[in-house]
Structure formats: structure tokens, C-alpha cells
Image (cartoon, rainbow, N blue to C red; front, side, top):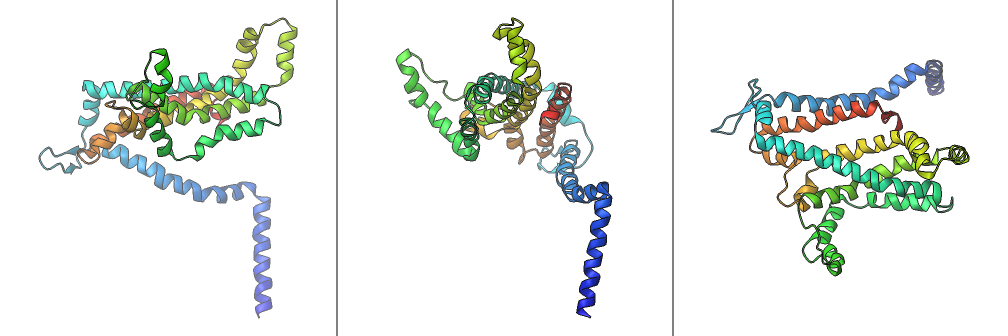
Length: 296
């Protein structure tokens, strides 16, 4: 009986394997069902709860959440000057970090992809990835020590009669640029590695100078990868609040307001939390036109 049961079990497995082999769509559906359910329940479900709770209010006397539909929170976001300033400042910081990452990443990626020898390229890529292996808090507190009064920044700039930026908005932008720079370097490096050398030679043969070759040949082909890297740098900077809290001084961004309102006014914190989601969705729609999403 045991042998017959084993044979029947093996036959069932073979029939199932044959069915999956003949129907690749069914196989793909079964493979994606679990992760898609996980995404729908946990991620999209939490976003739905966030959006719904943003329309609730808080009792001013008891601080209890009142589950009554109201647009007061979003009206306050649009009409209160402090909220508008924080939102614009947060978007400005995310854009500044993205621009700085692109400016710094391009020459580094060009060197690792087109200038360095083949034997050095893997080592350089590992060196670029190494900061990602360190703890987020360790890196931020290291920058706090560098930027603090009498720290490394002051020590380096003192012979020139200058001082470090200290704690504030510039320090937050500088630290965020360091944190997310690898996410910009890697897509650009990949695009430059895949750039055919024959195009550069043909441009030179036709009399184009390096600047013209960069503008007309290199930049159009690498721009989607720059946009792909910007998706990471922009979204990660827009939602960050720990870095600003550690090195930002009195600077307030969206993340800090969300954190400070969670205990006092949960619906307002939810309304503030929807702002980065909406901004990032709009940013992704804009980047889609550049082909950035296909480069991710």
C-alpha cells in the first residue's frame, strides 16, 4: 500500500508539473499571488487607512480621534503658512539633494565605467556600495560629529578663514546627499558601461569636441538612468525625518511634523503623511515620460 501511495503521489506531482510547464501564465500567476497579496494587504491597505484617517478630526478637549468625515485637516494644510512653508521646504530639500547627487555622481560614474581599467571597476563599485553596509544612524551621527562646532569641518576650513555649516538646513542637505549618493551612482554607472564605445569614436571622427559629444551623445542616452536614480534620492529625501532631527537644528520638514503630531493629533499626522505620497506619485508620473521607470 505504501508503494502504491508513493507511486500515486509521484504521478500527481508529474501531472501538476506538466500542467505548469504547459501553462506559463498559470505558473506566473501562482508565483506572484503571495507577494501581490502581501503588497495589497500590508502596503496598499496601510495607505488606504492613512488616507481615510486623514479625513477624521480630533476632539480639542480630550484629544480623542473623532471618526467623522471632515476636510479640516487638508484645509489647514493649504491655508496655514507654517504647513505650506514646511511642505515647500521639504520638496526643495529633496530636489536639492537630487541635483547634488546627480552632479557628484556623474563624474564618479564616468570614471568607474569608462576610465578605470577592467580590473579596478569591480573594486570601485564595491567601494561605492560600502557605505550602504553601514548603519543609517552611524552615518548620520558621524556627520553630526563632522559638522559640530570644533569638528572636522571646522578644522579643515579654519586655515582658509572659514567654518563649517554647523547644524541646520545646509547640514541636512549635505548629509542626505551623502546617504543617498550610491543610489544615483549605480544607475549612471550601468548606463555608461552599456554605452557603445563606437558612438564616442564616431562623434570624435565627425569633429565633435568632448563637450558636444557629452551633450549630443552621452547625456541623451544616460538621462533615463539619471532620472531613475533621482526617483530614489528624491523619495528617500522627501520622507526622511531622522537626519533632519539629528543635524538639522531647528529645521522642520514634513517627516518631523508627522512624527510630532502622531501622539497629539493623529488625523493631522495622517493628512501630512499623504503629502509625500501625492508628491512622489506626481514625480513618478513625470519621470515615466523620460523612460526612468524602465531603467530601474
